Length: 225
Length: 113
Image (cartoon, rainbow over the protein chains, first blue to last red):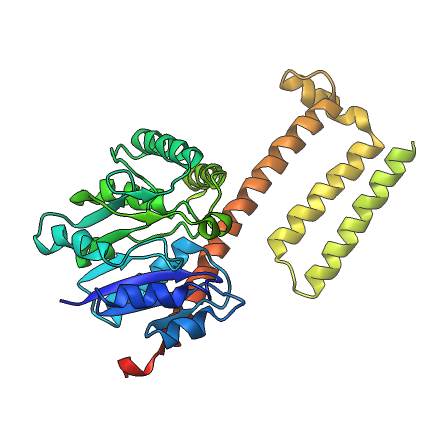
């Protein structure tokens, strides 16, 4: 059973190594996709024991996840793929619980939920935005979840092959949910702990990012080619 | 009067440029013909604005100039839409290339070799 963590990273030199080491305690390989960082992200990830794929142009988080997934399936023959963040928000120790439903053959994809688990210091504004996101997803994708945009997921080989991310930027999380519905994949939610440190909040998506996601999704409905 | 002259001058300029580009094989024959035709019509309309009135009245619009504005808006909107679709396609193709290069040049730390 080969378990691969796919870690998209953009200018995360200070935190990526720790995230890689943390993930590697629970997976066989950590694949860091460096989305054209201008800092030492690649080097630090490599030193921490990751396999590093470098985008020579910045293509976004969705594109990075897909690059890592392609590599994991083709070159590493992954059985389970875990989407993990480079910024240390996620806990490697949650991976065991996250992949359990796939190992037990109860699910094809397991979605981490910040609302089932403990979100350490999640600001109220963020909470509200995520609740709205939940409602939006229920309307658009018809899937009821407690948390729609948590990046922590585990995918079986089958679902990783079915779910091909074409939204290069942030709307990929919604796209994944769309595809779960399209392919009728079995999904469950699993509580995960996400840390909201001031540093992460400063660099990560602002809550306004939600509007960008909505814009991206609507655009994709009109511009699909 | 001044506007008419400016318009005709610009139309002639556009036709000259297209002709030059067509000679250099930078644009297709199809593009050359349609572009030249468009600007020829602009010249005709600039010289005899009343010429478009009968056509406008045929579709229920009073003045030919109004008809031209409406048609221009529709054509431009469609053109913009086409460009956006095309842009999206190019973006996706770039991602494919970037992805392929990244995968082919995967770097492994010593433990994996």
